Image (cartoon, rainbow, N blue to C red):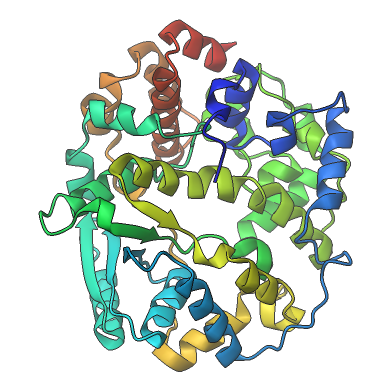
Length: 429
């Protein structure tokens, strides 16, 4: 999940790249030769193991629900048996598949779900599924998480980031897990946190309809004509890589001019709307970096701070290889944007699962003004937060994301011993 020594080697340009794009390619973090950025991106893509348009994809996995379940349980058996599993459970396919796998092993485990305000529907659904599988469901609501914010704890947790983690869910994971472990019966050192991330690369990283439209617009090249001063328009007019989500909300408020040019890094990689070309580009541009550095990074930093272990079973080599080499029609249907077909079928037949994708959207419950006063103002100068607050073009949900990303960035930089003026330079120059 990262090199603990790396954070001591990061340049201002590296930190700025995370601030702008939420990721930084490993060959940029660990440069070993003077390769031009676009050539390095093409070289990295060529070596990327999860391209379907390559010899790596053999399509020889037997597409059986029973075999998939066996592979899931095999990956769970490899988790430290001396630790109690705590599964981060949503109603999504990935964590549900792991919950089913534990039940198939005959293990009754604890699950933890972070709830939006008054989300009784999700709470009831998770409770019913856990009762069916023999697991014990636990819940922490968003208001409890936000009100438990503590500056010293947050900054201490940021010391566990190997690189800046811009994921908007970091605060919720950190204080949500901490709230769970406030129970005297639960000692974090006894637990391994089980996270369902890690299979988007191997199942075929499908986009949303909005991302496809954004990608098609990006291919027209309008984003190249944006004046550098028009930061806010970047939210609507993105490059091909940015259309897949490799753009922070911060980049729509601040210039962050010292960042590496990741559009150049991705520029020589074939990016077409034809489905396999599209899937390969998305798996590399988003899955290879964003998922690991950003999304998994929030879980790793949170659990390390609390003293628990963490495991991502979908990353297990045998399971990842099996999933990647499934026949295409059992991985996704590009026309209907149906992903993870075999996993869907498994959950539908075993659990009657028919849920719609929700995502970790806890930040939608943030009140911008109270969050600024009660959280941001304790760490971030007013003149910086004011730039986000006073923006008239971007909607509230973009500001909510930007506030959370800004908090994470400041947390990482302060933990590194950086002065406020140095952080401002990263954002404003």
